[in-house]
Length: 101
Image 1 (tube, rainbow, N blue to C red):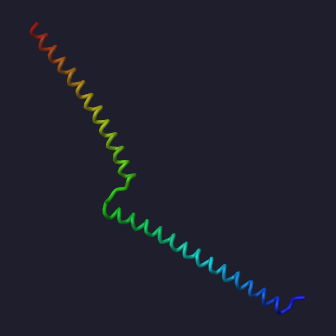
Image 2 (image 1 turned 120 degrees about the vertical axis):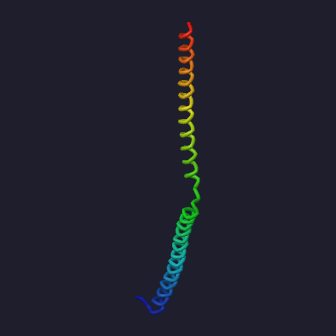
Image 3 (image 1 turned 135 degrees about the horizontal axis):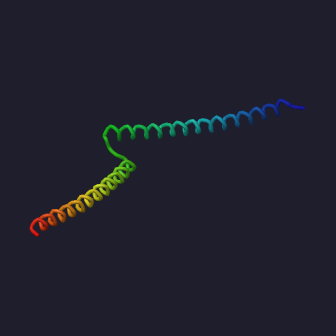
């Protein structure tokens, strides 16, 4: 048999649990709000970087790699040019010697 006293105690127990759950819910809501604020800050920083035309580390690394590749390609072209110039010089000298001999 349930008495009024038991019912009151039960109600107080439920109320305290409800209060505890409500407090946890508020903490979670604040946590979610701060996470949303963090995302907003990241987005604003990205916008500022784009506005100021600053570059990130990844962009700098990519630029560095592109410059190394371009430098290597130019180095190869220069070597080819030097070899071709040397061969044409030898051929010109051989032609001049052949005329006089």
